[in-house]
Image (cartoon, rainbow, N blue to C red; front, side, top):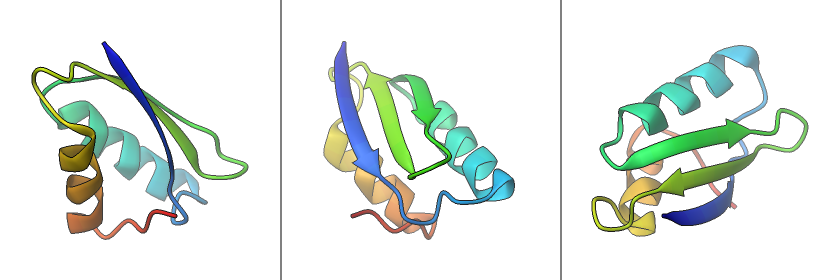
Length: 68
């Protein structure tokens, strides 16, 4: 199990956080995603044999999220 911490600048409202969590949970291999509502920090636990951190980042960007 791998872990990644990303900073998503768009995760600043209930709707965007819910959308972000939904995208991550639907991504095959992502086990857990927690969003800190105060600063947009996203902690992700994932199976790195099923999905890479790069794939996670690309998927979020494809859905319009901006990462720092």
